[in-house]
Length: 326
Image (cartoon, rainbow, N blue to C red):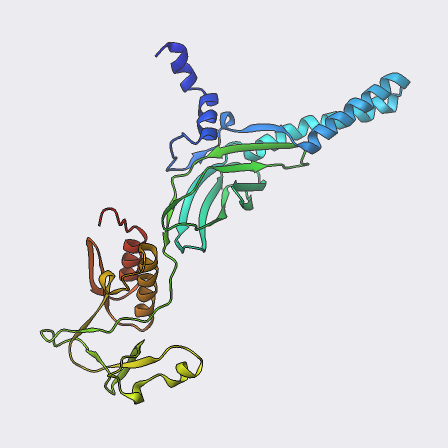
């Protein structure tokens, strides 16, 4: 590699090209928008303003209008000063990725960007843009503010934030100063829950300190699909009156049981994504009825548990499940 090539790769022009082409490395820590990272160009109103100044100057020269000269150069001075204020409003701003909230497929992933202002003046009308998602904030002097970018969750798995544009048109909108950054931020997207009944608990005679699921008369546990051997007095008649399928009320006694959400116990005709959606709903339903549950996936087994940590672990396993490696 020649010296000229090495110098080009260290230049801001090369980094700008990598950002535009999507080949730049992700930036994990706080990113300082230095002067060399901030670009500025006139807006559509700025070009119109410049054209109007040119016409005013031409008319003043043609008709020898002293007041025309004064007004033209006064407005030109305002335009020149606005360049400084627009550039200064963005330069040296410190931007860092914040938390990214998980979501379900079809929902919205909310990415947080923290903007810190080390300068002794306020930063006004700072806008962050990422595709169709937009957010804006004002950053006080020696303080910070947060911009939230809502991105659509279209597929399960990790959702990485794409290139973000930070820009401002302050103070008069004649110029646009902007900078690009590629934050190292990602959020989990869980499968879309598909409503279904919880499976019946599996009796475990060797464990006597748990509770067993049955159709006794102890604590109510949930609903499951009707089976011909079920007692008529345990049928959920109110649900049947609403036109739903027959469901049987399940009660828990004091024997031993385990509730397993098992991949292999789902309908065989269901595809991979459908099974994951069914298991996602079962995880949420088991948490809602406060019953300990385990999860069995091809190649992955999570022992029975309960609580937010166990729920998040199960949802993460469902979101990152890869059928090709199972």
